[in-house]
Image 1 (tube, rainbow, N blue to C red):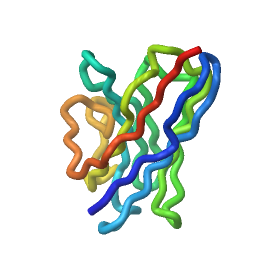
Image 2 (image 1 turned 90 degrees about the horizontal axis):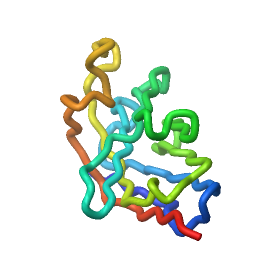
Image 3 (image 1 turned 180 degrees about the horizontal axis):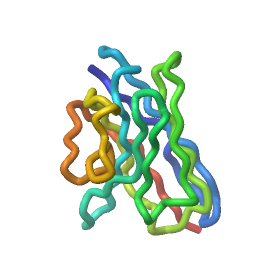
Image 4 (image 1 turned 30 degrees about the vertical axis):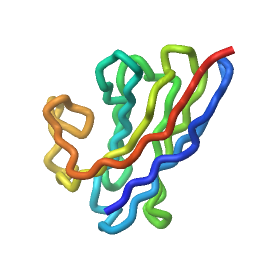
Amino acid sequence: VQLQASGGGLVQPGGSLRLSCVGSGFTFENHAIGWFRQAPGKERERVSCISQSGGDTYYADSVKGRFKISRENAKNTVYLQMNSLNPEDTADYYCAADPYPEGDYTGSFHCLSPRYQYRYRGQGTLVTVSS
């Protein structure tokens, strides 16, 4: 199983980046994909996730309205479009996958919930927002 995140880099405040997460070695379309980030000295944060079909998407309050998650199952890829970036978005971003059925999501338990555990995790891509 591999999850490869890419697309990070240096961007100025107010700029945009699009991250990609490509999965292999498992049935991609049967897995929810989540994006996480961790900045130095800070706790890991769940940023966004998308269900297997793409019908359910979730965002942390810190990124809501600025980030958009999408997926192309035919390409085994999930994207995270990040707009209006600010220095607080600087972090190592990585993606994770889990097969928990989206049909079992509830209002309090879904792929962005703190109790939701991901089965697979990939390596990160560094995003730096700085002038």
